[in-house]
Amino acid sequence: MEHEMHEHHSMEHEMHEHHEHHNHSLVFELPRVLDAQVDDRAMETFVLAYENLQPAILVPPFTFVGCRNINQEPTLSNITLMVNPEDEGQLIVEMDIEIDLLLGIRDINNVNGTAEATIIVHEAFLVDRPMESKFPFSFAAMVAAQCAGGSFADDGSLAVNLCLLIIVKMVVDVLVRIPIISIEPPRPMNSLINCDRFFDLPTYPDFFCK
Image (tube, rainbow, N blue to C red):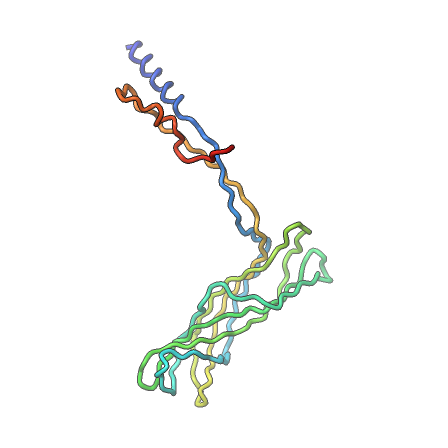
């Protein structure tokens, strides 16, 4: 019995020796969010200038069906930064955010169609002032928009009740190194086939030059 236990421990020890660890790492470029501003607002009876009616055979007058944003990432422009005179640890940020909307409409013949509109929302907010660095920060935004109602006037103009969620992020791209540990599986015991060369290969490819 003791002899069998000794053999069992010897096999476990041998299998453990074949669990070789290879340390590698991957490098990713990721945006780091330094600060963020969240703004949700309701814009009542907001007049939209629409274009690009599809299909072109739509016949007015139109009935408004709904709207949503086309892109999740809007265009930012006219960005200005100023140190807050009341707190030097903060920046006053102002920018214009351009949001593209897809409109759902129905014409007099009950034909469904779409149109497009673009609105510009002005944002002004405070962020923590970052320290000076070699690589500058930038701004990015995410937007979600949906119409809670709307109607066409007799002259064809469109007024909607627009619900907006805007998230503006102050970001900087950073390099992140993530270690990878690959574990070699144990080799089969008491094999009659010589697979040493195969088992000596790394589990995953490595760089040729280290």
